[in-house]
Each structure stands twice: as structure tokens, then as C-alpha cells.
Amino acid sequence: MSDYNPFSLVGKTILVTGASSGIGQATAVECSRLGAKLVVTGRNEERLVETLSRLDGDGHVSIAAELTDAEALKRLVDNCPSLDGLVLCAGRGMTLPFLFSSIDKFKTVFDVNFNSTVECFRMLAKAKKLGRGSSVVIIDSTGGTPNGRFSPGNCIYGASKAALWSIMKFAALELAPKGIRVNTVNPAMVETPLIKSVNITDEQKDLDRKRYPLGRYGRPEEVAYGIIYLLSDAAAWVTGQSLILDGGVTI
Image (tube, one colour):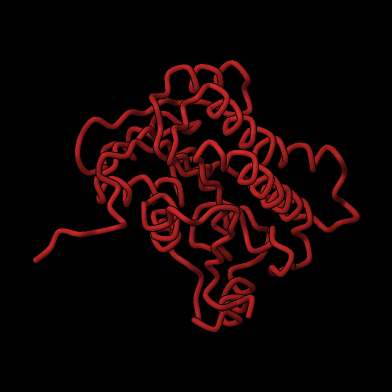
């Protein structure tokens, strides 16, 4: 039987932010199973150690960093090896009606979801840590695309994700001559700790799940598989695009 696998990550070094839980952790684990060497980062050092313990293979590295802290971000970039892939997973949610969404609330979410994410990406690219042929995958949301799913109370979170969708387009265009691809993965609701921050009851979540044609929310590893596609050589001709993973809810 042939060992041919265009989705293999053997020989690739990949940095995953937000790797201490949820989609970030699942992505790191699945990437390691396909042969990648991982650099994992997040705020919680104890949970990062747990992520490291779940990775296949060896040679993986963890660097604890709060990406909203300029000095911590600089240390991360300085200590990061040359990369073949970058997965930007760090994020937070906030559920508030528009009339209660003051500018300080926007700033709190944008600092994590947009500002620090984009600055991490920019600094790594400027430091030439992203080589020719590398792939950047930004974890966005179905609420961050023009034809996405919009629900009351999510304007702050959705606006931060829409900003990421926009920056992906500009970065993909400007970095294409350097051979760097940039795409987003846009999940709908996924069973991660983040959904616990959504201020709705379990009964409301159960009702919401029934609106999905496939009858459930996604699982972190299912999002990781989409990310892996964009990191792999199978997606070598894909840039400036959004991969929608939503169980059919935006149909």
C-alpha cells in the first residue's frame, strides 16, 4: 500500500496559539498525529503542559505567553523557530445586547480576538519566522463572514471576528508574493469551554442545537481537521479563503 498522503504534516513546524484548551489544543494534538512538530502557546502554563503530554512524537515546545502583553509577545516571537504553519486560536467571547455594548466592552474583546492575534501574526511575518510555502490559519467564526449566522447579543464577538475576516483578505493579498498563504476557518458553535461563557441556559443551547441540520454542535477535532487541510500541501493553491464548518446551520 502506498504511503502517499497530501495531508501529511511530516517535516513541518507549526505554532498554535490558544493551545491550552478547546480548538487550539485539539489542533495541536491532531497536527502531531500527522507528523508535525509543535510550538504551543497560551496563558495557562499548567494546561500547556497537559497539551504537551498529549502530543505524539517528540521535539515539541511550549512557550507560555499572554499575547495581549507586548513584552510576552516579543519573547514568544524571539524564541520561536522558523515556521511552516501558524494557527491563531486565542480568543474570548462576550454576550451583550447592542445597547449595553459600550466601547470598553468592545476593547476587552478586540484586544484578545483581533489586536493581539494580528500583532502576533505581523511580528512573526516581519521577523521572517514564516518561510516561503508557509500557511497561516486564523480561527474566525460564521458570525464573522458576510453570509454568516447572526444572533442577538453577539455583536461584540461578531464584530471582532468580522475584522479578522477582513484582515485575512488583505494579508493574503500582500503576503502571496512571499509564498505565504493566509486563510480562515469559520466554525459555528463548537463544544468547547468558550461556549460556557455564552449567557444562555442549557435548555436554550439544546433548542439551538436542533436548528443545525446535522443535529448538533461541532467537536474541536472536527475543526482541527479543516485547519490541517489548510496547513497541508493539499491546500497549496488556497489563499484568501474562508472554510465554513457549521453543521449546515448557515444553509
